[in-house]
Image (cartoon, rainbow, N blue to C red; front, side):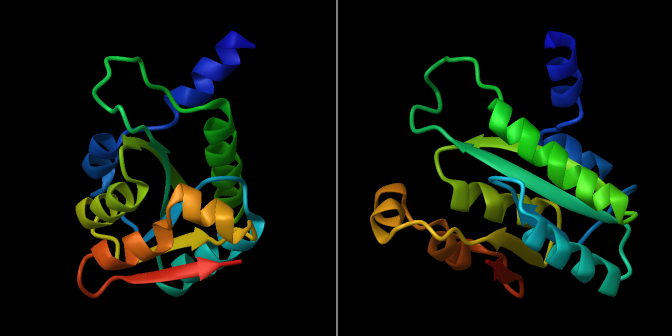
Length: 159
């Protein structure tokens, strides 16, 4: 089981590696991944097909307030599972998925910076049906992301 987890994590790249891969696998669509979400993935696949693209960026962000605490950071097992499941869905429809993991003190800032560095003009994310208290305590990534996106980029929420 440990070998399987290592193999899964090796398929997930950092933002710098994804930027280096951009000439080979360019996409204008970045999908924020928190959990496996087939509705979100279906919409993202439709967009990529409509744009004539054969790749898609999948990004999962770990928010860590003590970013420079010296602790070793790795994607959680849930993030690995979600990225791999979303990549599998894309692969079944003929798209090459680039799963990316980022650690940041702000998910909104990390996603907007990823969109900027990857030259994506569309960021897609699922909207949860959780309570208003949950959103208040966690912060509202959608509003923060909308303020920080590069000029001309669109934010599409699915859910």
